[in-house]
Amino acid sequence: MTTLAGAVKSAPKSSYLISWKPIGKLQQTVANCIERRGLGLHSGKISTVRIWPELAGEGRYFDFKSNVIRASIDYVKETPLCTTLFKDGYSIRTIEHLLSALEATGVDNCRIEIESCDSNDPSVEVPIFDGSAREWVEGIEEVGLKVATDSGGNSCKKLAPFLSEPVHVWRNDSFVAAFPYSQVRITYGIDFSQVPTIGCQWFSSTLTDDHVYVKQIASSRTFCVYEEVEKLRSAGLISGGSLENAIVCSATTGWLNPPLRFSDEPCRHKALDLIGDISLFAEAGSQGLPVAHIISYKGGHALHASFVRHLKEKQQMKNDDDDGDDDVSREAS
Image 1 (cartoon, rainbow, N blue to C red):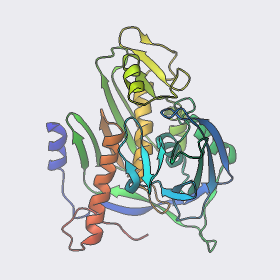
Image 2 (image 1 turned 120 degrees about the horizontal axis):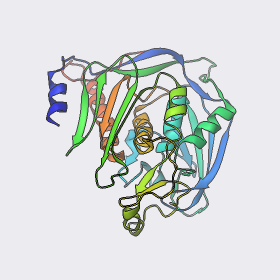
Image 3 (image 1 turned 30 degrees about the vertical axis):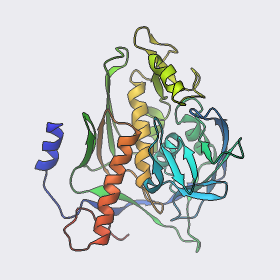
């Protein structure tokens, strides 16, 4: 961590950490409704998701029991092994794969209607399918995208956050950092030294267009360590987990359900999660991912959320104080 902290501190300082700028694209939405039904990984319950077209500037939000919960870091609640939105007593769990697909394929605005098979449960979980984002990508490709317009029929420019200096969060030997860069690049490292078959892996790729995500990231599945399964079940997690919706690796015998889709599939899946979690920085139809080189090592949903909160808090500080002493600003479109 000394090396990371040193790199951040030695970089040139600017009075503006983030500038929101047009990226030469118009905001988009889905061209028609996407409907999918499936099992929740942790709850073991069936839910139905419908993704509806939405006006420009509305962003992405969930509609659960007629309650609107925006896909925003403002509503993220700390939960083990997944990202959860919580508002007014209602919660939506395991949103990261869906949001990852929406962010990466350019669905900037949509209403995500979700229903649980248990009408009395104030919580619901997004279906896990095969443990990747492939099902969502296929649904988006089936209906296609269209330019989103506002209530007056006008299209809107899509904005993205650009960094002028490094920003980072860390916890022990884990970190998420972002450095100014000409495009979006994701680099992710994991270290499962206790599971030799997984071991230490690194994955890095620019996200120049959605084809990179679709071909290299979207189909990578969630994974777990076989020796930890019973402990997770005892904690009330992965009730719906199986060899059909996760790749499972034993510390002694290796993968229980090969073959892998990529030799570094676990690491690619962590990159998939990161994209979904950082998408929570988006608002009003903007891009959530900073135009930056984002590097994470041994991260997870909680650390991803801390990184987004760090960006959000500094931005709010700047919005509240125009003295120029803070690190974050937002440019007008």
